[in-house]
Amino acid sequence: MNKLELIGTDTEIFHEVLPNGLNVYLLPYKNKNNYFISYFTKFGSVNLEFIPCGEKKMTTVPEGIAHFLEHKMFEQEDGITPFEFYAKSGTGCNASTGFKATRYIVYGTNNLKENLEYLIKYLNNPYFTKENVEKEKGIIAEEIKMYDDNPEWILTEEVEKATFKNHPIRNDIAGYIDTIEKITSEDLYRCYNTFYQPSNMGLIVGGDFNTEEILTLIKNNQYLIDKKKTPLPKTKNIDEPLKVNNELVEKSIHNVTNPKAGFTVKLPLIDIKKKDVHEYNIYIGMILNILYGTSSGFREEMMKQNLLNSLILERMIVDDYLTITFWIESNNPKQLIERIKSHFENTDITKEEVERCKKVWISSEVVMTDNIEITVDNLINDIIEYGEIIPNKVPIIREMTLERLNEIRKSLSFDNNSTVILWPKNSK
Image (cartoon, rainbow, N blue to C red; front, side, top):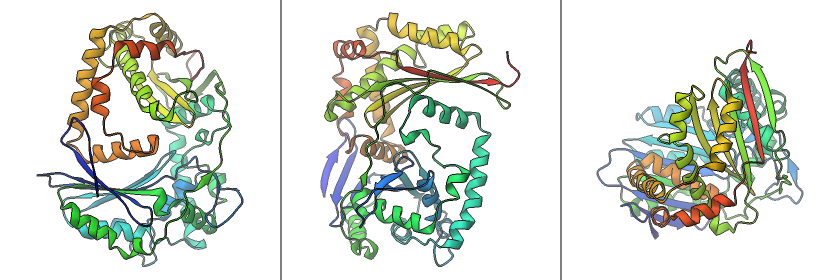
């Protein structure tokens, strides 16, 4: 096992790549009663065009298939679902599908070894039939209808469509009723056999345990021994233009009391070296936090002027682009967005603000590592976004400077932006 230290914290990670290509990460804690396991694959809702394992031609699968596959992994041939198995020991389990990955989690306080082995077992034993696939379509259709009435979900989907012209991130993660109707058991097996291969997956176990024992258990698991190493999946490159798809989209819907808006800035990453993307991203995070964060003067002033009810900041890397989205609730979202843009262009950041932000950020990084679930999730986010765990986040933050921040800030422009506003149905 290779040992990796999250520098500046007391956290150690043990990493080993199995002969079949599976990346195993063990995160040992002391004096913890709980554990958290995540078994994940780099297969999300955007992976719609790829060369299936064992084939030579690019194929296209229906929107929503990654989410559909996640659902079907919980159906086993013996009729016992993972939910039922884990409930016997008071253990929790769940799964989630995102744009870039699907994660299966198990968490509890006892039966770690047994529950880990069962997780490996059921994720390496898919059971798709024509009958159980057809049954699932109705269940997922109801789920989609439920989200169709959710203002936050509607806003998120409209923001992605306004920001991106060609990228499949425009699509709903769950797909659409007409697209899930097209999914077959053959489609599911094709996706599973391509993306649920060990070389495209990772397994992270966090808790109070003996690392050698857990690694031995994983290495000796017959379901993993039987898996052979395969090449990484080949997916289609997306030709996505820099210009946002729509600069302004406005909709009136019934179940909104106060106007909600998403203001997104689309930034290119094409000229930034891969190894520098993480540093670039965290500098942008610092700029946004100082200018618009919960303790910023801007936020306080906007609330005093009754222009702001709530504001959430989000950054996302999508292939060659980084997006910054301001999720807003405001009685006058257009005016607030103009104030956001003006504040970015006309407000200086001081060295004192940078140093204060660094101290808070470092403290937060250290505190978060004491939470097993958060730490595991953060490690997976690193792997998905950057292709590896970033062990030196604290030193990077500690070494951040006002000069470098201003250099990056000067290279940024808010001109390439999209705005989506959801108005209450009867508002003027």
